[in-house]
Length: 340
Image (cartoon, rainbow, N blue to C red):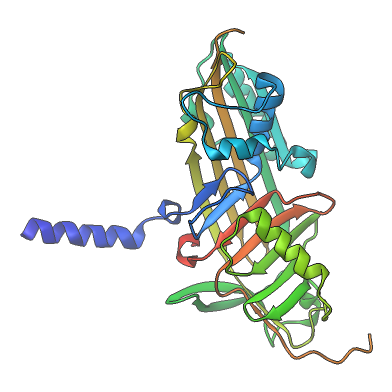
């Protein structure tokens, strides 16, 4: 009995101190993937790898022997590609695995991003004439046009709290120029864009609809285009955004040791990582994706009422380059305790 009580105490202690990345936050392969998971994230890195896999090696939409997962059909649609990114923010490599391949990739990402890899040593690519790797890294590090105020701790959802940044009554007016209102229908349905010093757009969408990211993005843009109210962040408007920290690794187990129909290609392993931080200063994003495989053959308006743009319950974040067609990152936040 004493041993059982001791074990329960240990489990309770571990549940308090377990890191955020151990919680259930789903890494999705595409923006059109469906899920019942409340907290989920997508970044375009793995799609870049998959596009290269199709274009350079398979030359046709991928189907797998003994059953093709739904998300493979979604990846085959190429709903995102590298044309939505500037060359300076991503690195891509594909080719035969030699004894110097990993060293050369590490050297390249060190030179381009001053970064190290979190997955290459885990993948442990084996050199050989029939062994291949496709690798990509996406790196973003940018600041908001104005550094927002740290607002302290407030509630989030039901029975949760978070540290927030944003705008309140004490915020200097010039900081408020860093917020653009997209639309405001009510306290549970609104969206804003946070301006940055770079060619980046940060969208925050307060909405609890459990749709895929592509549908959510389309809904947000549609509501914004039809909004007739003020898109200026007014003097008495307020903004609260929770700090977000995320560190995840996803292994696509359904692809492991699977043969591509119509080819001699067998996928060995496929992985993706997502590290995302957002605070009052700006955004940091680092994502890697890699796949190894064997190929045996070779103005006079009425002053509006003050609005509270409090992202204090389920909301979505999109990141998009200014002239790009689609975002390169999406995150749905429901349980804020997973993002500390």
